[in-house]
Image (tube, rainbow, N blue to C red; front, side):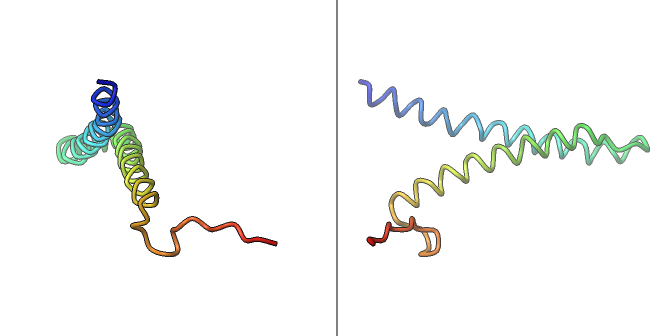
Length: 86
């Protein structure tokens, strides 16, 4: 059973940043559409949304890149450098 628990925790580690990125996107969307009403643009909401969105996308993207690099699915320039003998 530890395998199922570890897989569940791994899924949660991807879902939570996904929710954070989604919330950040919604905050940015709401800030843009709120600017159509009153004359002031809600910069603080937009900046908070941008930070949350960037964090979530960077985390999920980094996880995918790490997994692909481990399985050797990336381009040659992103592969790990082998240590040279002297």
